[in-house]
Length: 476
Image (cartoon, rainbow, N blue to C red; front, side, top):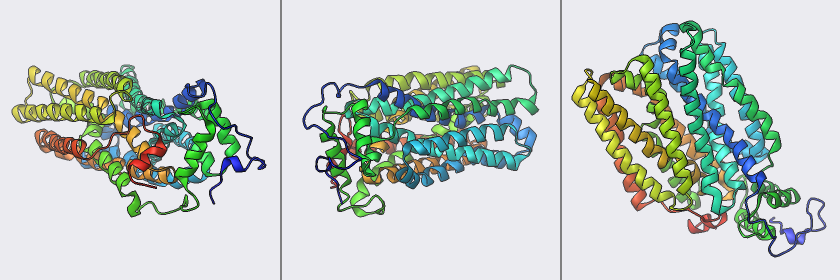
């Protein structure tokens, strides 16, 4: 039965709450910023873990004697873990809380880093990469969801986008770390182990910083921890300055007198947020972004670059990703999610089409000019991704589901993202080996479909409180 906070002053879990405005609470707080940054460190590790393998592929091919199929599976092993991690994390997040699950994610990241570095054969390496993938899948669900649930509506886009900024920073760190380790002359048998092992240090930092963050106020209200929810909202700030009104709105959105936190996700009433989350997740990966992230050095070598040059070009890719993610964060709550997606979609189509034409024209005999065309085109592709889909996806999926099913809904969207990512990353080496042009032409065609989806289907969620979004989607 739904509990009205104002009727439960006698409950030991509830402190008296004054109606009306609470001066100063509309302003963002230091705790809000700190908690956002700490939760977003899960994204940094997510980015590092997914990109670090890009610099190790030649060593892994030699050490484990891998053909193109086995290499694709090796790269995809972590992605298979993300599929399991993303789909498994919903109910534990509802039962134990978002913060508790992030602790587990930190442990998984650490275990994967150490285990991958010390792997004694191909199978043990696959296992520890799979473990890390579970952590990535969990973080990609819980980090943006936690930030969305602690953020005022006017700041939610920028704050949730900090997760993507950290993902991008993690990717750049992985590229930089790989390059610096490659310059140390450690030898092929040792070099790749260090590349994976260094992730253990930020994983430990993430784990211990989590102790300084509060639990999600929306999760607290859903479990009737109303006093703690009140205290957390008082420190974090609210949209209208009234803690009472905020908690009342959360309770109304939960509507536990007519719904249950355990009710099925796949109901007709939730079809709109489900379809929106699944669509944006599918389009995100059909752009080919993860193929580029995992195989950036390989793509540049295909386009005529040397190994060291390819690693440096990968760092340029990471830097471009970082710069345009920051630009996107600065305007996402001003111009909105749809306009970013429109701009990004057009950039995708132009850059991918140019890359496809370059591979068709030069085939395997790239000139210096052809290599430069591919590099510039892929940098435009990366900029388009960072400014559009890369930032918007985690914000959008964290917004469209009602409070009572958000964890499972977000898990579904992220599961879809990683399922398609695994398929794209596994098949890329085999397809690109036959025709780089066909590969990038296919991605370009998919981005034409994304553009049509944005124009005709995608709603704008900028500045709308989470509880209002479900009403706008026709969910009571």
